[in-house]
Length: 108
Image 1: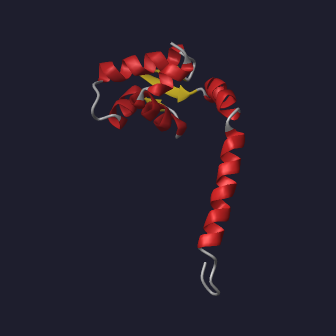
Image 2 (image 1 turned 45 degrees about the vertical axis):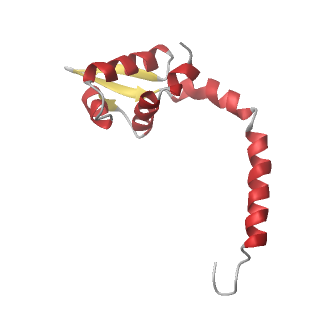
């Protein structure tokens, strides 16, 4: 499995979102996905570790998980090819909004 396949799964994206806020124990991560069991969350975390998006370290009896942001570089590089299209479309949207909703004096 590659990084693209790993992040295609919504529960794994939810785990990455939780880890983007900071390190979390396995138990804390299970709590972020109330519809999943601990074994299911563990399987998702294993996949994220295998594609280098997550790292784990022992802390006594607990395992602490952390995001490996550099693991997202492959996705960032791929998306980078398409950013130029966004800028053009966002500029057109900004112009459209300015034309259809001009600022009125005293209001923004």
